[in-house]
Structures are given as C-alpha cells and as structure tokens.
Image 1 (spheres, rainbow, N blue to C red):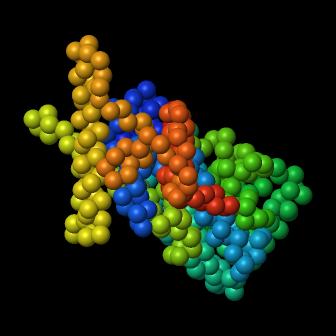
Image 2 (image 1 turned 60 degrees about the vertical axis):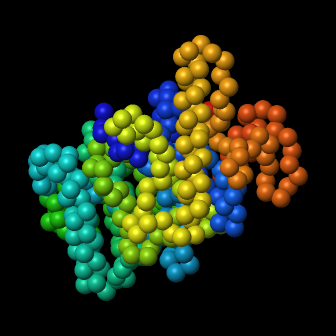
Image 3 (image 1 turned 45 degrees about the vertical axis):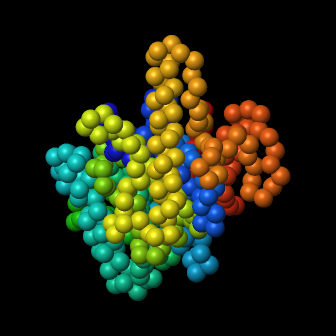
Length: 397
Ligand SMILES: [Zn+2]
C-alpha cells in the first residue's frame, strides 16, 4: 500500500468505504450563504483529491477534464493544432535514456525535466519559424502499474502538429501500426532524421526515455481525454494508455500532478455565494475532546468570526450528544441523545427537522433519506452544463 496524506485519510468517502461510521468522522464541513450565515449546512469532509479512489478521484478528473477542454477549445486555437506527447522514463537506462535508482528519485526530477523539454521544443519551433507556444501547455503525471511515473503533455503548435501527422502517415504507408506510428524511436534503433528524431534528441537530453511518443490531436475534446482518461469513445491512443496506467499514488505528498502554462487553464469554478469552515474534532492529552476550526495565518476574518465560533459550539454539541449516546448504549440504558444525520441543516443553533430550499414553503420531511436529499441539494448549489461543480461531491450512504 502507498502512504496516504492526512487530508485523504480524513475523507468521508474513504472512511465510509473502510466501514467507519459517522461517529468516527473527525472532520466536518459547515457551509452557509454569505448573505445568510444563520442558516448552515453540516456535512462530512470530503477531500476531492485525485489520490482518493472512487467519488473524489472521479470528481477531480471531471473538473480537470472540463478545465482542459475549456482551455483548448478557445477560439484562437485551431482544433487540430494540438500536439499530444507521452514522455516516459527509461528506468533501467538500457534504451538510450537515463538510469533511475528509485521511483522517489524519478518523481523529484519530473518537474525540472518537463520544464527543460518544453524549453528545448520551444526553441526548435522558433528555429523553424513555427508558432512558438508560450503558456499553451499542460502536463499531467500518471504512473505505470509498476508505480513508475510518466508524463502526458499537451501543447499548441499547429506546424509541429502537421509535421507529426505527415510523418505518421508516412509510417503507416510503410506498414507501422499502433504505438509504432507515434513513438519517437525504439531503444534498439538510432534516432531518425524526421521530426520525431529531432524531438527525441531533446527528450533524451533532458533525461527522458527515447520511447516517448508524440502525435497530432484532431480535436480539443480528444486531447482532454488523452490527458484525463474519461472519454466515452476510447480510440486507439486512449485505449492503449488506459490499459497500462493508474494514478501516481507513489508520488510524494506535496507532488504537483498537474502543471500548466501560466494562465492557460481556467480556475475550477466555485459558487461565490457560499462559504464555509472545516471543523476538526481533536482529543487532548487528558482525553478531552473539542471541536476547532483551524485559525488561518492572521486570524479569522472579522466578518466570519461569529459564524466560526457558532460552528465550533454546534460541532461540540453534536460531539457531546454522540458521547452521551455511546455512554447510554454501553450502560444498556435507553438513548435519549439527539441523533444528527450525516448531512443536516441548522438555523441559528437549532437542528432542523423539516427543511426545503430557502424561501420555499417548508414541506415536512418524513424520512431520513428525504432529509439527507434535501440537505444534499442545499450544500451543492450549482452544477453547470460543462460539469463544473460548485461544492465537492459527497456520497451519502
Ligand atoms: Zn476523498
């Protein structure tokens, strides 16, 4: 098993899959409309990380896919002007590349190796009088099943894309199929004279393996699919990549899986009408439990302070009710404590047993399922047509 960072370990989606219950959940999210902080929704914390298998990773992939599609489909770009490359490592150094001692060492070097390749390829474009790509690029790191990383790269240069596609056609006429059409060179053959040979020399100079690939992409959509494996209609390239790849779970905790040119990708959207706080339940050395909102550098903003203090009070209340219930059960007495569902709505400091959208006629909620469904809607205010989600996905059992 790979080590897992703290914020992923505290994720409800993960803990639930491990069979842990609501009482074991230590991190909670309280959210409210900026215009009305008295009405708060409480839900379990979810990490939204690509490292968190299941709902979180899938959500992260969708958001990334939407950002990449939006960026590459901008009017100023020709749809077939994109180049897609897979930069691989030659881990044993037997095929003309650099030899690697460990996966960790490789992860550490990926960032600067990518930067150097981009620099060299940029200069190549410049020398040939082609479009010199500035910030129009993105790199996402993935791993082979063995745990060794590789990088998927997209960049915009129509002339390079055209040159690559001409060379691919030439190779196809010569009878090459599959990966052989797009590989820069095989380990047992010298780098050729064509554009792939030239790209290959730069790639090797930066520490990558010679068996990296480069090809032209025919649509922005397909391109995003190559980088983030979400495509509904897998074509040859996607099928081949998806079969052998996985998330780079062996990456160091602070590893940046996505890099991109400055300002190239739009920010992940969020609903500015909402804000919230993460509350952590902590236990001190005497075994006393408390609920606290970590204080950001410089302290809580004045306009949030009231809401944050209220949230700490309420979470502590829920915590003590849970303790009371556990105590009663242990003693074999009837449980009289307030039971709070995983997702709940609070007005002022009171748990709402009936709820609906703000302003609507309040319909009585008769089951916990309805209650959760209503609260869930409140905490997820907007999903737009492109798949941007305002709040993170929570799956409620
Ligand atoms: Zn998660």
